[in-house]
Length: 220
Image (cartoon, rainbow, N blue to C red; front, side, top):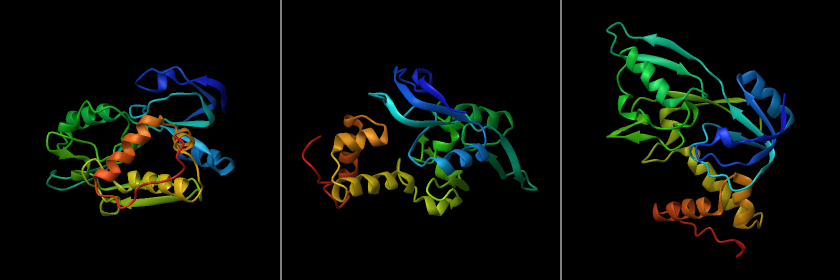
């Protein structure tokens, strides 16, 4: 199932040549559940458009490649449609598919890189339109429990390029700094991002009025 010492160059938009200790591309929820039932310390990789690799990933990398689009419901007047889309679908290709079907609402969000599954993370938007305007709900697999959790639109706390999912990362960073005593370099490595990316995110959190200074060990 897993491939060893796998190059991630083709799995990130910067084309950085780094290697995963072990790598697997999953195409079903059942496969993903099986993997995390045995291994919790994993690195989840989607479209690779919002990550800058600076070193090899010394853990299991799971690439989300689930595919599928299903029309769940269409109103009698054809003004509303509910579509279930798998996380591994390319976002831009999904928008084009909607346009071909004459499903309006997402056309302003075309050409945004990444996958459907990560689009709610930062509430992607363009030209006055955000995903929250068309989003209904998502199903997420909790790694710790292996259970599926449903997040309705209101549960996601969407804001400008923000969501509850980004805030989870903020809480993790706070805990690792304050309670675990990890350095910022160690945290960046754990999250699979560069030290510069972590610094920029911390600055953004503070500029948005977060009440914590994220103080921790002085070593970066």
